[in-house]
Length: 450
Image 1: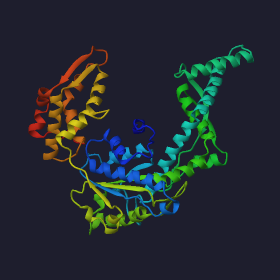
Image 2: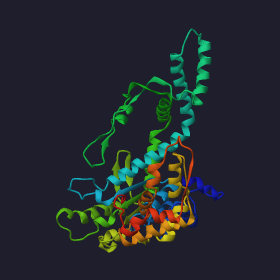
Image 3: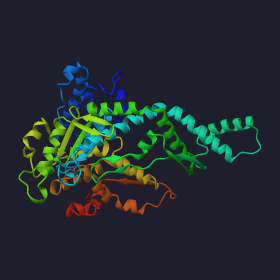
Image 4: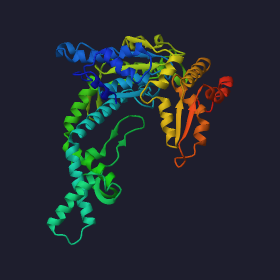
């Protein structure tokens, strides 16, 4: 996770990283696109700056929302997602095309705020669960030890039985009984019922019944490992103050939340007719959410005034100027992400910790293929990827997946299995030219186009 890298800055937490440090962290995962990284880094830092001001002044300062313009696969979503992970902020990605204006059947725009609240609840609950995990684990291991002790009981006395249970607790903690099957009682929580398709609203029967003490139990036969996880979740839930979780989650959603609205260009057309009649209507429905309003969720009201909105689109056909003026005004920062160059592709193939070449090497190592890429092979793969993007549809870094699958198809198919001896395979420039000859000449990548 990104947060583990923050320790490089002594005495600095993820919350108060400077814009330069934020960009430095993003550079570990995203190649290029410096302008977009700067924009989101400043937006993130401004949140910290705002938090240090007086409450009266805080109310006057709203986030400067961002529109990212650029082809698919160049890092728009990844920049926003990594930014959220950096500060453990609630984050959701939505697609503008999924929404319809009021009066049409489909998802209403307020559901994005409800989804953000759900994300914030999960985030805070995970943190609170981690805080009580030690106690919950101890209770779970003791409960399982009692069940195992009953299964294995003999004519022991009560004292001997207690000692036996203590020994079992140690063994369960060490994982010695993970695969043993036991029968335990667990909470039978009904699944939430959705009120209407696409509404985003649901009735959580489990929370209703638990609130009035009507949670039912049911017996299940599962492994000790599964039982331990279930009981830990149950016990942690008992130790957590859900009201405090909800209050903290709503606070984070309102002040730290990030909503990424993808495909905003698809609703940017004006004067549409027929099936597209609701495009401008969707823009007008999104407007109050971005401007600042209060949306009711099942956890309580959420004010959207200080949520950071990042919109993105390719804008091949439409332009940013085709959005209604009011919505444009709520996205004062516009950045354009560039198409990836050969140098970018080389960096993507080599620099990230889990670069695509590392991924394929690890996958094929399972079948005892020791795969290595030479420098000239990397250069050639990057060159081919750039060329195809320039002469056909530009799908950004996703092009590397199509090229790599085509390139390594024979090796992947002929891999003998993990029972065979290790076979070293070197992919060099000559190998790339031979195996990509067809697509270089004919652009025959239909099989692998995403």
